Length: 82
Image (spheres, helix red, strand yellow):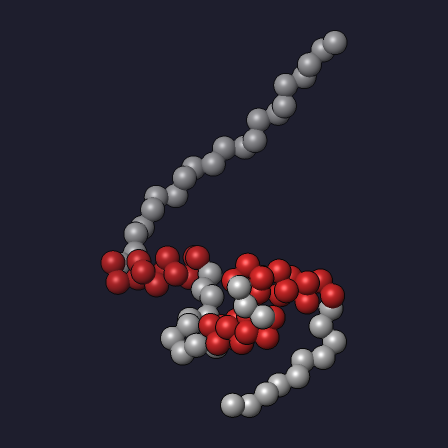
């Protein structure tokens, strides 16, 4: 197996990794390996925007023509006398 060295990790990130490793009962090194393994696993899809996911799912069903909604001018706000 290969090794890597990661330099200049800010203290907050290091602290969060230490806490996460402790919660899982791992060393920081093991937790970092697990994070890398999971994030780079084959078949791990890239995040998709919700709108794009909905469009892809609905595309085979066809489109819908919606009627135009008539718009009226915005009414003047009421005048409140003191």
